[in-house]
Every structure is written in C-alpha cells, then in structure tokens.
Image 1 (cartoon, rainbow, N blue to C red):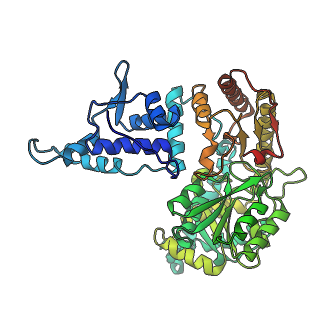
Image 2 (image 1 turned 90 degrees about the vertical axis):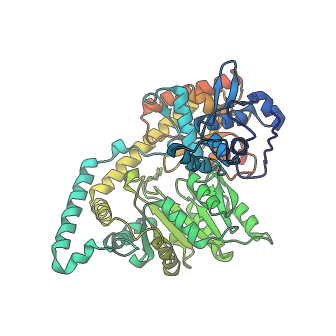
Image 3 (image 1 turned 30 degrees about the vertical axis):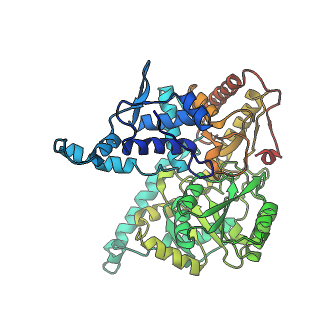
Length: 539
C-alpha cells in the first residue's frame, strides 16, 4: 500500500481520530478498496511517529464501525461497507447494474461516514465504555469506578410518588376552574412561576435571593451552559476554564469554537494568581469564565469563601462574566457542620455572575430540571435564545419538584445523603492508602460531590491503564478527557467516583486498580501512595 497518512499534532482532533478519518477518506476516494490490507500496527506507528496505542485505537474505531476487519494470518483489511459503496457510486457511470433500493440508501451512511470525526469527549467516553464492556465480556460484573453518578438507590421513590400525585391533583383542580384553563396551554418560556418563586427562597441557603423574573428553568446545567455559550459567545471569543474541567463544558465551548484558556486548579479550586496573570496580558480579551466552585469536577475541590470574594472582584475589575456551575453544593462534607459555602453570586453586586443550578444529581439524573439565575438584561437574551428550540419546561414536572423540595422531609434526606456519601468518600480514601501503598500515586480529598482525581505514576500512559483495567473488569475515565486539547503537559490521571458504590464495591474496585498498576509497573515504584495538599503542582 503506497498511501501516505499525515497526522497533525497541533490540532484539537485526537491523533487516532485523524488516522481513522484519513483511512475512511482514502476508501471514499477509491484509494483503498475492499480486501486491501492495512499496515501492521507497529509498522504504521513507527512510520507516523506515534504510539502503537494510537494506531490500535484508530483500527478499533474503524472495526467498530464495520469499515475494517481482521483475521489471523491475513492481518487487517478493508471490508465491504457504506464507504466502499460510496466509492463505487462516485465511479464513472456505466458498466454497473441499476442500484437496488438498499444500495441507493447507502449514500446516507457513506456521506455521514465521510464527515470529520466528532471528537467530543462525551463520544470518547461512550467509546471507552463500550470498549471496556467488550474486553471484559460480562456487563453484570464490570465495576465502573469513574461514573460520576449519585446512588439512586438512596432516593425515597415513595415520597417522590406522593409529590407527583399531589402536584397532579393540584394542577387538575387549577385546570378545572373556568378561569384557569390557560394552565394547560403553552406557558412562559421562563417556566412555572410557582417553582421559580419558591427557588428564590431556596437559594437563600447559598447566600442570595433572586427575583422570579431572574430565573429561567432548564433541563439542567448542560442545557444552561449550552444556552449561555450559544447566546453570549461568538467563534473565537476567549473563555477561561478550569484545568482540569467539567467534561461537558469543554465539549460545549469547543463546539461553539470558543478559544478555551485553561487555568490550573489547586486544593481550593481555580488559581486566581494565574487567572490574573492572563487577564493582565496586553492581548487579553476577557469575555467569560466558567467555574465549578463547589465540588469541582473532576477533583472535588471546593473554593474558600475568601477566594470566591476575590474572584468576583477580579470579574468586576476586568469586565468578565462568570458562569457558576452548581450541581450539588448541598452535598458539602464540612468538618463542623452541613452548611454549604456561599455561592459566587452572593458576592456579586454588578450582575456579573450567571448561576446555573441543577437538581438532577441531587434528586435523580432522569429528572432533567434545573435553572439559570442571571441579571434581567442577560436573562432576557437567554430567554430569546431558548425560544429557538424550546417553549418552556414541563409544568407537571416543575410542580412535582416544588412539592418535593418544599416538604420538610427533604432537609432530612439531604443530611442522610451527606452522611452516607461522606462515609463512602472516607472508605475510598482509606482503600487508596492501603492498596496503592508503594506506588507513586497521589489523589485529591473532595470536600463535596462524588469524585476525586487520582494521579498515576508518571511513567504510565492513561489509555494503557484504562485498557488494562478493562481486562480486569474495571471501567475508568482517563484524565485527558477533562483537559483542553494541546494544553500543558500533565501527569497521567483517572477520575474515581465513590458515591454510587458500596464500601464492598469500592474495595473490589480499588483492588482491581492496584493489580492493574502493579502489573504495568512490574512491581516497581518506590513512592508511597498518599493524599497530597500540593497535588495540583504536579498536574
């Protein structure tokens, strides 16, 4: 095969995806045809100057799509697929029988297959999950230690059933009144006024009290952040974001073609000294900062009150908008009590903080309810933007959430969640101390949320660890997915989740992790596993 592939390490598209795309393009052009053999992994990796893992991932992706196949003794070769069908369709007319209906429809799959690969982190995560399940072969016994999920088995489903029933009865009574039939029609894009009015009081626990007209109901923080990005950003606008960062936030900003500027975090979250250095640069065009001040994802770091105050001051000084992502501030593991830290918005006197709130991980993920709190002029623009794709939010669901949150039992449940999740967090921290002793591992100690970040021995490769862990029935998420592409070099890492696992499952998961690392290191490594306050200096 004389085709030459060329990979560009300066772009945001991952190398294995570039290679897979180039192979598919060669098929569509007719340069690679059905039955042709591809180079062996090691040889192609050497020619391209990349790791064998990169080539193997590209081949795996193509095999999953049915583009290539392999056979012992024959190597890897091109299969008959929509791409080869598209190549035949592009050949000069004549000499071929009229296409059947199914063949005529091949253009769609071929056309889509010829698109640039979607390098979204969500897509990569889905691919890694499927890959791990295929390698292990038994979905029932694989352990996902990186899910980022709450434990829905703790949720009082019977009380939710009562909340929905009461909300339904009250809504039906309201609809039966002749003067209130409008309740069944399309309502305000802002969402149910009753819930918005209640949330004004609810948010006093975080130190601020908005007006109902400053609240826009959403399906959660992903929708909220996507709306903010589409309405307030133009391609090329600078966005300052934590490093590492919330996976979905990176996807959203990159899809909007914003220029992401990563700012490292430490044990208290975003480093303001480094942010200020960037803002002071002559070429800086500050536009927007996205931050998760409580339960930072993926580290679990929580910003101190003083740093929150200083961050809002910086925003005022440099004319910066702040997007505050709050997905579970209620789940704060304080040493002295259970009061969460105040929101950034509580320090805001100029309307510079756009507060995103989600109830999906606090109640249950399929709830799909949250809100945006913003100054009226900003919210008006966001409402206009939302009207382009959604008329509003489900009224029955909003009323059910109102019933659920306003019940005094909700506060008791929050206390229970905090106690149980803290117990599981402590169990994971103790297991890491026990099982990773003798390895050069470090980890964060989360003060809120569901996750921590584990830094691996520096000589290991993230994706190799993830792949070998899958062979032991352990699903991990590599730290690279939480970073801006082509950012600063960093230590290999994985996210670990403790919230949706029992102590017994955590023990088994950490044992599988330990055996994976020790096998890769061949028993090497003299460093003591430890939790480190200066963890982030090595990131």
